[in-house]
Length: 263
Image 1 (cartoon, rainbow, N blue to C red):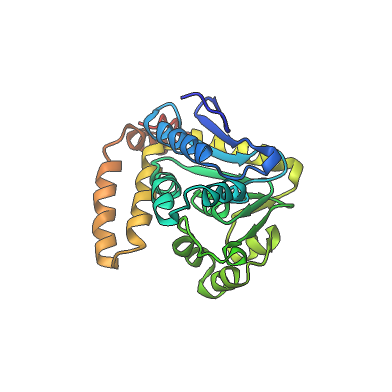
Image 2: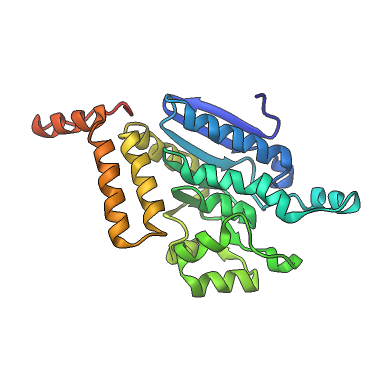
């Protein structure tokens, strides 16, 4: 599909998806949500894509839903928030989390509300020094959504997550790093470069093994140790049948760097 609100650019095995409403700090509309979902589904199905980088155009990453659009819906026929979440935000977060390839967030500014959820749904989170994070739902009398109540406590612990949820205060990039919310903080002018370097490393990695690792981690988060080990055995059996595993073994024995092709 032709995209109106996102940019979709691939170089080698690296696909970069850019939320592109800079005048609104990339606030989410129904159109953008549909386009992001389509782009991530396409990335999952395209064997040439080995890693996805998600970022925002301009000075913001994503402040969450476009509240002016929400206000328009309320002024019209009203809004069923639950129905809307199930049709738009939830499928996007689920698709990102289950994508069998690494997803890197290059967080170039504020990530708030569902925009923060989208950042959290990524596997690695690289933040610019000027980036900030907040769960702003309480400020408009709403409940955290888009997977926030599941992801945030697992990333930073219940106490800190509760603080963010109940106060709506802004967390700086350095605080986010100290809390374990992001993996790395870099100067603003180096964000794109660092994200590109990391993406290039993943584009040369054993893609299927990474996908199976993501599946195993997701499974283990809601199952017992015994169940997780059994699932690991299943994933290891699948990984052991890949061409990349065979190449990895050959490279190890031949004392050279492996050349993985994601197969």
